[in-house]
Amino acid sequence: MKPHLLLVDDDEDIRMQMRWALESEYEIHLAEDRRTAMQTFTEHRPPVTLLDLGLPPNPGDPTEGFAVLTDILNADPMAKVIIVTGQGEKQNAVQAVGLGAYDFLCKPLELEELRVILRRCHQVAKLEHQYRQMQEQFSLDEFQEMLGSSANMQQVFTLLRKVAPSDASVLILGESGTGKEMAGRAIHRLSLRKDGPFVAINCGAIPENLLESELFGHEKGAFTGAHVTRPGRLELANDGTLFLDEIGELSTALQVKLLRFLQERSLERVGGRKLIPVDTRVIAATNADLKTAVAEGTFREDLFYRLAVVTIRIPPLRERDDDVVLLAKAFLKRFAAGEGREGLVIDERAARAIREYRWPGNVRELENRVKRAVIMAEGNTIRAGDLELTSSEEIQIAAHTLKEAREALEREMVNRSLQRHGGKIAPAAADLGVSRPTLYELIGKLGIKRE
Image (tube, rainbow, N blue to C red):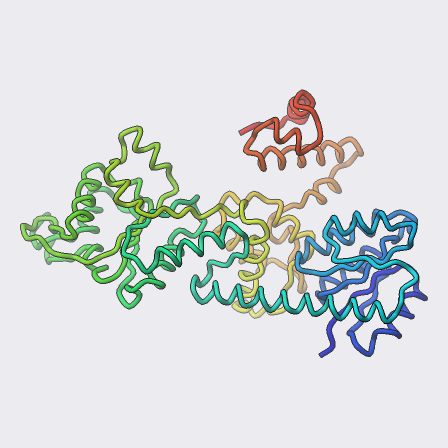
């Protein structure tokens, strides 16, 4: 199959000439403005786009061309966009490269030079695509659904690979929904215990009076209703791994008993008198600040250091760059297949909304929203509304007056900068290019609440 190439130019004669010159080598797609360019890009996903900056409604101004460049790279950061420019617009082309364009060519175009550049660009795109596929498949094989190409997640994968072959206890930290149990399963799957059981228990989901029996088991007659002897989760995970979620919810008494097990590698069932040796690796997880709990006396310091031989922090989704769109597409592929709706795609506004949203529920929330969108979407495109999200562009469009639109944009930019800098005024002001007093004034005027 011939590689796909998108040509965006408002001059019909140029579009026809380019098609005639290149159609023997490429599957050509044509567009004359921003709207048709993005419709065509969304439908065909060409790896390379040849883009003239001067587009309607004002061909003498590069604004629409810059907008198309931004839209394409938002929809697919791996896309290659080559800018076509006149000599007088060369500065605009340099600016476009700074925004992420792959290269620029000056008019009039030399056909052979263009062919060489396009071949090289398609080859680079092909190699990057193959590398990313290999990277994702490698992560998929090792970590199943823990997809991620961001630097943060690559560091997590490196730590998981390093710690897995040892028998050290691991403490996994992260907000709710980040995938802490999946990380625990990955450690088990990569360890020498992979053929043994992986047993998970949520310490915060079981009443305290039952949790001791769940963890350590009980002897027949140990309490009312104990009609038979029953091994606990620690025993059931013998030769394997026990995953203790929400470890911060353990009572002080159970903390002492767990610490004794970690020190002696043996346990007594509830109501028992016999020490039972158990070879179980313990991986604990929490979304709580255990160091603060230690300082406050609600979590034992000696147990904390026994559990946290190695600590791994799973970053929240908002700190994972473009992983959010990668994950959304992976969930879309799975759910669309399950609903018999293969071919569904996420449009560029929805992709932008996905990137802009803070995802307080992390990966779990993203998964649920994509599942909903597969059900709610009409046609073959998922829009921001199907995800119950709204992009900043739609916020501005929704405003009724120019003043409201300006305030909506200011509010969005200030909020985003404050979130990016953890609520700190000085770096946020520098990021926005305003003074600190001006930023304080904006916060008050726009009614922004600081966390």
